[in-house]
Structure formats: C-alpha cells, structure tokens
Length: 60
Image 1: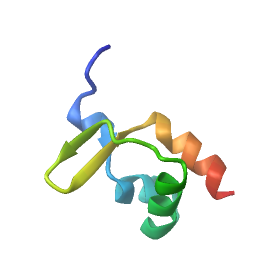
Image 2: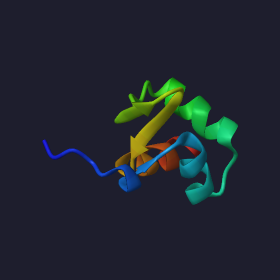
Image 3: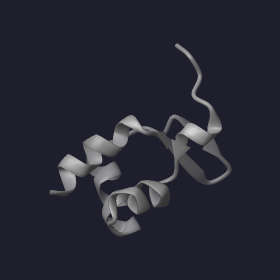
Image 4: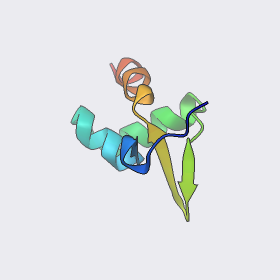
C-alpha cells in the first residue's frame, strides 16, 4: 500500500473545516464509527481524505 503524503492527511479539525461543521461533531462521529487514524504525530491524529465522505454521511 502506498503511504499517504502528509499534506493529504487531515486532523479532525481539518475535516470539520472542510465539512463546515464543529470539531466536536467530527470527533464524536470518528469515535462512534471507530475510525482509526492513518498517522499519528504526538497527540494529533491524521486521517486520509476518504474518511470525509463517511463522516459527512454519519453527520446528516
């Protein structure tokens, strides 16, 4: 599997910004769906862009 470039990954806050919703909503959905981060740097979790669609569907 090809490793994602760092700029292709988003934090929960970045996903929230893209979807125009609050960070809390995104974090709640990530926890509910048990979505695992693609990368971790310190305490920050980074997710690939393909989770945006899953989160968008779950929020509605």
